Length: 244
Figure 1 (cartoon, rainbow, N blue to C red):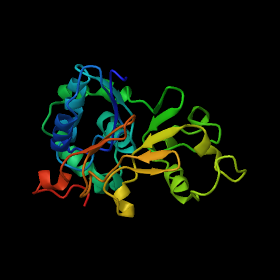
Figure 2 (cartoon, rainbow, N blue to C red; figure 1 turned 30 degrees about the vertical axis):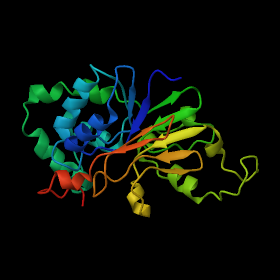
Figure 3 (cartoon, rainbow, N blue to C red; figure 1 turned 90 degrees about the horizontal axis):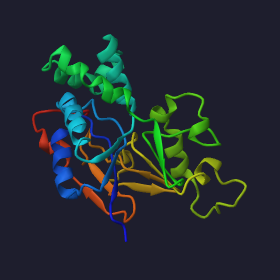
Figure 4 (cartoon, helix red, strand yellow; figure 1 turned 45 degrees about the vertical axis):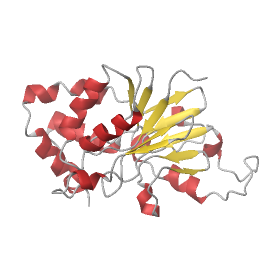
């Protein structure tokens, strides 16, 4: 019998109210392990506050923080002041507004958090957790470009497109999908295919349920596959657009 639970948690996108609501539903114990799949910022109005909250949470619970593409863009802006117009459009403006409430010294206390984000982790040698995907047929440790861990969408598209009738032993079965028993990702909201809960395709579990838009924030117990969700996040921020 397991003495602890491991949860994979989808993209938060500045929705701290949803995160607080979700964690209450999990009824955490000190032994539980929280694996956050990235994209903590860009969307709702509490990006900076979300990072401070996660920093404090990690002092009380076992947490693993994966790097998302939005986190990489945000940290580049925090360090250098450089940003792209596309980042502003896709949630960056809300993040800038959030950080404007804090002093430069307060913001710098977050740098260690951003610098400590993991590209991926592997549990029990057969469960992979990362934000987006990987492209190398030999696995994530052979990836040529770090950015692919948090920008790739081909892994999810590949998993969705595989014929369920195709045997894993078939020569045509995608090699990337045979490397791990389970792969947990975020990055591409399942709401794009009209789903509201985590979707399993081949070995891939997508836990991004569209919290940046009109979906909920979701956690999944990786052992039991029990799903926990906040309210749709836009209902918690009625005067905001998020990334809608």
